[in-house]
Length: 87
Image (cartoon, rainbow, N blue to C red; front, side, top):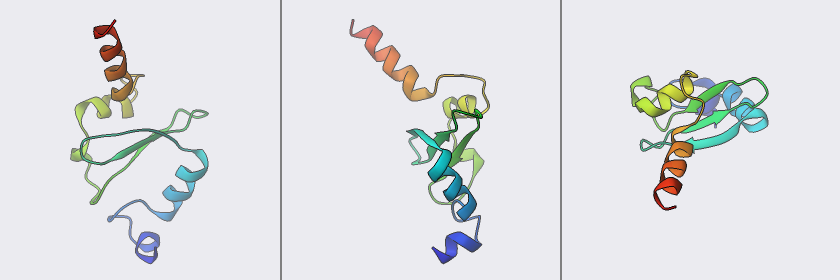
């Protein structure tokens, strides 16, 4: 916990933790273990990296969602694709 308060490079900061707790809606998790959140009121989207913070650890699908290029997150797309294939 002490490490989390004073170091931003190892994981999320205490401010991000509090913001995520109160305003974040968990959207999904990628293959690297990163967790993605969204604030429905403001439309803000963010990622909590697993391990070292490195922007290159985001897949292209999640990158598109994070930057509002796509409105559906990758897990929603997979669910829709799967349901269309099985109907």
